[in-house]
Image (cartoon, rainbow, N blue to C red; front, top):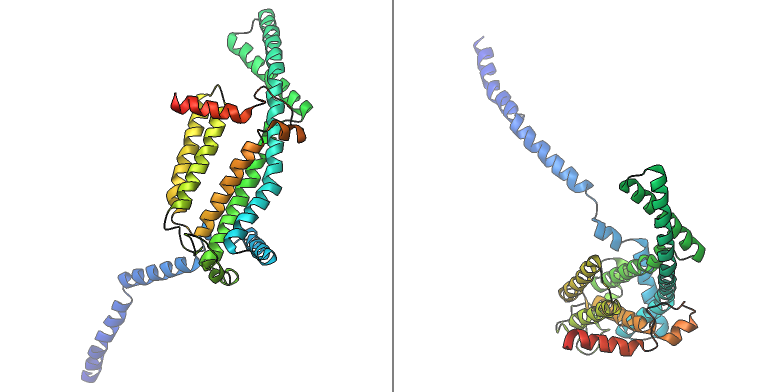
Length: 323
């Protein structure tokens, strides 16, 4: 009995130790550790990393590599030439199509105004006959006017949604090219790591290394100035600007300024592409104002057209900022 009691007493500490090791607190800690480990293991890449590792971005990397190898140009010249080629082959035709749609919409405004006057008279007569209130009459006027305008857009094949086609093509192309150059400059994957050393020696002038940011801020500041010039060209063309258009114009001005410090922190290859794209966009905007080019592309004439568009822009700029 004594041996049994003593042996029982000797076993007690070990059992208590087992109980302590399986206490609720330690179980909670262990479960938290398991949960954090499981969550860390199950956490996937961010949306930015997923986009940078997407198939369109990798295809764009291949396009840049093939273009550089085919032309034999240094990387800085290859990036600029690829930008000019893509903007001219893709966005310039879409920009011409956009201008044609906008010209057709502007030419319809006179007809829409006359139909709106006639519709307002017919609705007022109908309202007196049926005893409509002003709210009901306004509802029927707007409903029928929307139907008439929609029919005119279908008749002339110039729905305003078609004018936004350029944006839906230009923005993804800009994003894919930017991420492709970012991957190739930083060597984030095995396929892009092979071009990192080439980009490091493919710069020129004050940016010899395209994998590093521009230390002089010349390209970032130039990018901001070119974007501001594009915004001002659009703002000078409009004679009557609504409050909403003013907000949008100021918002784009703000984005142009914010892009300067952003461009100063990314690889020079990206900044060079952004600057080249903005310069080509500025050239296209000026080209689309040429009366000869508009006639060649068969863009319908509009009330905003001028035979001296560049002189008008210069005089409007001087009047706005120097008088």
